[in-house]
Image (cartoon, helix red, strand yellow):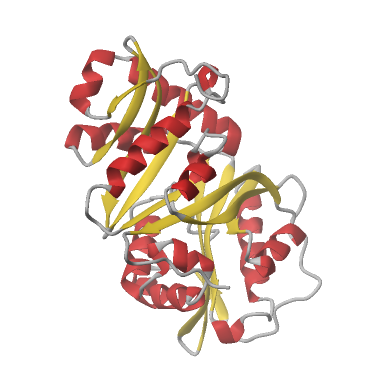
Length: 332
């Protein structure tokens, strides 16, 4: 019992291919349910992620916990080591088991394991793909720092309105090429210096990490197929001053993965220009909606997205932890 509620399936074991063998096809059924859930909840096609989880278990590059009754898995949570940090992935429970504390049990088990590994010294998680009701409290109890984020969507049924105040700067907008990746990494890193996003996400901590992030989006389709038409880089005198990277999350949903504007060009309408251009490209391709995520503390970006028709679809959080005596310092 927990808080007067019976926890069904309170047996938890290490998530490995060998351990899952006895569940036969039932774990595949749980993953299939997860794919359907996130497609309905976020309009996000999760099949490639699900296949990567299965493949990662087979290769031994993923670990985690699974809760089960008999041979039926009820919920799972996995993690992987990536570029000097541990990333927690899905925290998902089958529909009948949600709201009973099952996901929080799994998360507690996983956090206890990864914090006890001794390496690497950093752990991160974004809870967009979590069915837990109270994951934030579990993270806080384990010493994680966090920041609220929003997953937002805009319907594209109507023509995208043009901004009342247009960008007045010089330069030209063109397609993103592979030769741009280093320059764009520098731009994205610079635009995040001192931000809450940079504190909570190692991706933005250095130019090299930003370069790997861009390669994941552009070359390896790490957030769905890269959308060349909806993506754009703006340059002045051969220097990139703004970029938007976009992808397709599902047949009808285009996603704004990253928007960055050089510090000296911010506040002049360039970010609006980039997002509007992307929305028009999505609409021209026949997509029904566009999505993006934003940190709640980034009030300027949030205001822009709301003006362009984006509305919150789901609230979640970014969490990070450094092994003591190191301490995560968040911007004021």
